[in-house]
Image 1 (spheres, one colour):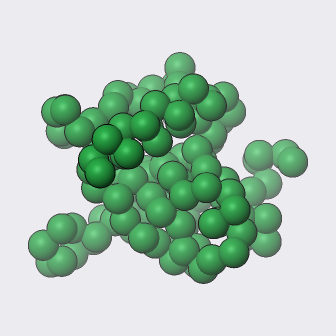
Image 2: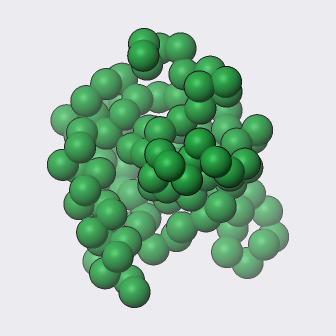
Length: 119
């Protein structure tokens, strides 16, 4: 599949870097942020939602992973951000705005392992 045409018909896959609305944890609002689809492809094909984790430029702690262009197998991302793997969010497929790129398999595996460490 040509990743430049990631239409809503095809859907997003685990490891995709997307722009999505992320709800503040106090529910006072939301903000569109870069996010990573962490739900697996089996789940993604059968549900109306994705499990996402947001990226931010502000927080660097034990619950974050630095993401940059070097971590992508496809796409262009000129920034450096922190992926917050402790901020998992369920988001409806219809509200995802854009596809930016796809993470390398080994980076995605690290994220999944870090998410599992929370449990």
